[in-house]
Image 1: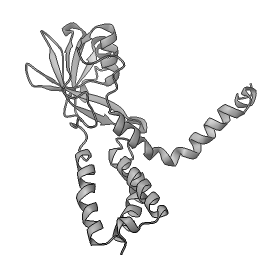
Image 2: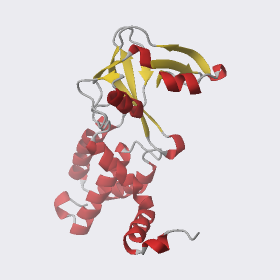
Image 3: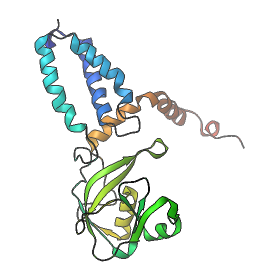
Image 4: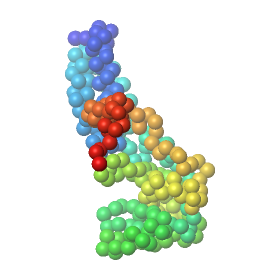
Length: 230
């Protein structure tokens, strides 16, 4: 049985890489979730099984302390430090829709709402905001439309406690156009923490050959060879 001190440099390096990518898998908010981290979990488990009893106990004590706080995502400030931020919505500029397949109302700019979201067969309720409307961000819903990552802050009305989804792009646009005001949010505010964003991005590693190919092509090939012929 190995102790931590007896591990070779190669084993320590493999342990560090496996731990890093396993942590990235847990923090990944993309559509693949932890799937691409499974090989690294298996390597890490194999290395831990080779440790002596005290090494295993240390690992079993330390790893949950690091990983468990990141299991739940939607209402977790470790992922989304914008949670608890305050914002106010201009009453004449926003409307709400409750779709048949959703739990929360969705908020839309009034011009978008009037032109695009009028098919009643998909809607259980709809109305436009009236009166003073101050909200608190209580969570962030992550959707994976077209295999991307779309963040929808969950905002709670401070007067009625009703909860709504408001797409981050609408918040940025509303802050720019002054239909939303906030002391803590800016149009350029990043909703996800740097730690979880960067570590979660490690799960793009299967795309590395394509990324490298694109980078090399753009950097080295003459522009006239990159462009498609007329």
